[in-house]
Length: 137
Image (cartoon, rainbow, N blue to C red):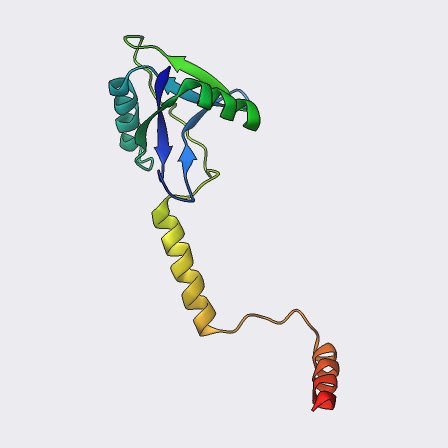
């Protein structure tokens, strides 16, 4: 059976699936209707959440993923009561929006250019290595 889920950064190495927190468990919502999934995605966007992509996927594949990661799943049937995102979102996700990754990489590259990384070796260890290398010449 084909269902619709919400994917962040679809098609990238930083892909993430939307879950809701039920108690202490993560739950993936599987929508029977693409329209319902799209409405839910728009409500997330209204909460200043990164914009997810609605993606069709086989329900069994989602269930297998949930079993392997310890997540739960919930089927949102078509024409059921309107599903509304929780008012409180987690502060930090397991993935980062692509824009944050780009920013982090830019900051890392510019900070690497400004100052060389700190050495993990002490001065005496470096002197010892330097002497041994000079002895090879």
